[in-house]
Structures are given as C-alpha cells and as structure tokens.
Image: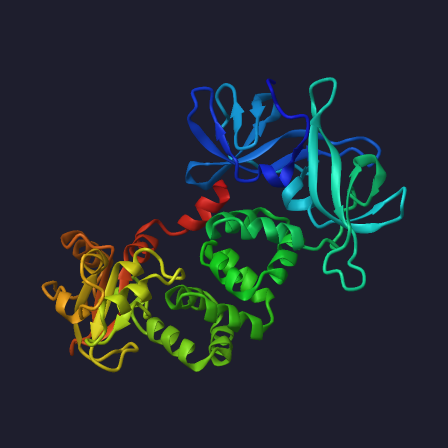
Length: 415
C-alpha cells in the first residue's frame, strides 16, 4: 500500500468515498470488518464494508486498498460486487464495538468505546491498535474524561452480551441521511438494533422507519410500548403512517390510532379509507396551503421549511378557507420558479396556475403518472368533486408505489 497514514480512526472513515484506479467513485465506506482472536492480540482488519450503487453493501478486502487519506479511499483492481454477509467469526467495528463497556486494566477505569484506530503492522496487515474510551461523568461534568489506550490494555471488547449502549453509534447515525441510517440499522444484530431504536428520538426514528422495508417497520413498531409507537407514528408523514398501520393486526392498528393525537389520527384514517394504489391513498394531506391574501414573501417563507421534501416545496396551493385539508375551494397552484421571479409584496393569487386539470382521489397510479408527465410536475393537487383540496401527490409518493413490491427490502438487503 502506498502513502497511507500510520493510524486511521474508524469513525472518521465512515462516509468517505471509495475510488477505483481510474479515479471513479465506486462507493462509500460504511464499516470495518475485523477478526478478533483474543484481548491479548490485536485484531486483524479484514476489510471494509462499502455501500455501492443501489445501496448494495459489498466487502472490500484491505489487500485491495491502496491508499487512505483525509478525505478518500483508493482501491486497486475490480471489486467483487456480491452482497456482503457477515460471518460468525467477524465483528463490525462501527456496528458492534462502539458503545461497548470496557475496563482499562492499568487504571481500573470503566468506560465506553467511542472510536477505534487501525494501523499497519510490520507484516503490512492492518490491525486494531488503539481504542478511544470515554469514562463516566463526574460531578458537574456532562462528559467523562477521555482516554486513548492500547488494545491490549482493555477488558470487555471480546465479550458478546446485551449490555452495549448506543450513544456513539447514534452520533454516527445522526450524521447520515435517513436512508443510510436505515441501511445501517437493518444490518445490526437484533439486540444491538433494539438498543439503537430505544435510544433514537421519536422524530429520527420516524424518518428511519419510512426508509425501512415493511417487515422491519412492523417488527420495530411491535417492540415499542404502545404510547411511544403512537408518538412515532405521529412524527411520520401521514401517508407512510397509513401504509404502516395497514400492515399491523387490526386490533393493534385500532389501539395505536386511539392513542395518536386526534388530528394526526384523522389524517391517517382518511388516507386509509381510499382504495390502495390510488391518488387518495398515496397523497400527502399536508402540502403548503395558503389563502388568497397571502403574499409571495409568505409563500417563500413557508417553502423554506427544511422539513419539506423538494417535491412538496415545489408548489403552493391557494385555497379558500378553511386552510386545513379538506380545504375550501382550490383556486390554483403557484410554482416555486414563478414565485422567485415576483416581487415579495405581490399577492400569490395573482400568479396562480389554474390551467391544469386536477386529480381525483380515485385516480389510478397510471393516471397519476400520466398527469405528472403531461404537465411536467413533481407534485399535483388532489381534489374532491366540489373542488376542495384533499392533499397532494408527489413524484416520490408515485415512485414508492410504482416500484416492485418489496423494493425497499431488496435495496436494504443489498446494502
């Protein structure tokens, strides 16, 4: 290997791009795979888990890594694109070692692992050499003292039990996109996944659940206490929550709907009342809705909301009162591009596009796809027979329903 740094910390590797000999990016680093023999000998690093196109996870042997620098990893030769499957003799550094409780033998300090360093031995193999440990907090200190110690000076890293926390893995997950975090959580051992799910806040767990396969969603939700499960469902978008609740046993679904806030449950029940794979079933009931007296400045302030997806932020829906779905009569939509060209004080009602036909809730997937394609849209309003806005269908909603059944499961299992 050429010009690699003498010591590399695992947590800093996660997310780094991996390049082939031609300089083309082939994936990103997601974890390190090591073989642990005993606490007395430094574990050999077998390779990296890389995420490649399609969220497939493959194994990159360390013998194929030619260079690691501050911002990227280089490999040599062709990579085996077969999906990575962890063996019983292998340990994942990020997935299984972070947050493990250990004891520093020379001092007797007990703490948790928050990073692990690897370096090359004399025989050119990469081994785990140093471990960063955070001791317990004392007095008014919010964090305990940190130590970087030799692998051989620790006890507890080879133990396999359910006492492992999730603090430092959570930090890594919170730096990832929700889809990447879902991919990582899916690959964790059952007890580790349970610890992570318990530690995630409701909003982040909701984001991750929306990216997981249905069987994972149901399994995770069924392990939560009912009160928390209802809170997480409230944090999910109503259409995703409706899809998930529909997969639960009827008595469980009914109980959770009763525990949800009435307004949130009302939206979910309304979406569940439409036939599957129709505009009504896949729509989002909370697009950006404004009255006719709103200005362009008001509209731009609303679409700046970072919680909106790009598709939802592309259109503003102008309606008569009430402004909660089902609204008063839909007057038209304002495109974000048009809003950006207008003076802030201009009334949104003066820049409406009212020339499009609107979707009805019974519209099929094919009809929704044809509508978006015809008008070059990434979102479109869904209205009832009286012209009241019921919600909006976005292109990501459409793709979610058009892709083959189980596509999330296939994508995650490839990861």
